[in-house]
Image 1 (tube, rainbow, N blue to C red):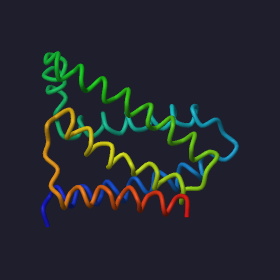
Image 2 (cartoon, rainbow, N blue to C red):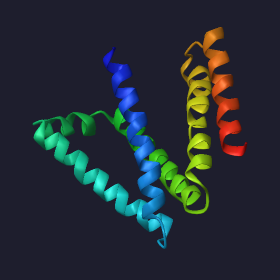
Image 3 (cartoon, helix red, strand yellow):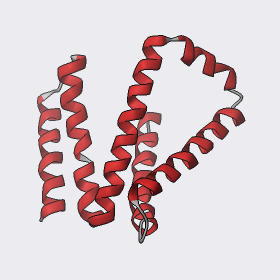
Image 4 (cartoon, helix red, strand yellow):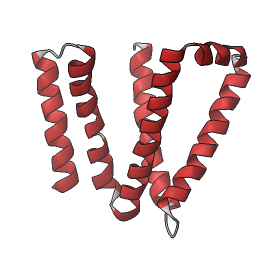
Length: 142
């Protein structure tokens, strides 16, 4: 199995845990406050990973590359907005409805990558993206 596939599957499994843990954790709490606490936990955890890996000196490389830093910051803002909206959706919706709609991010990412980055979508890939769209809607709304 390719390493990218293993990491992607582990990411999907962890994302599923986010939905389940988040839904249970949000009971009787403000979604935005809970998201902020989650973000702090994530930041501390990830800083710990960088420290354990001995890569703290590489932070300077990120800060020195203005273009990369700008896009990393934009990615962080987009990620934070995604979490805020996701937790708000989980607060009032069922995991079985919210999670599939959230996975439409795959569809949006493929389309935006084609439009903005010039990535090619094969016919088979296009069919797969269409199937993801239909499947997410069927699961969430069906």
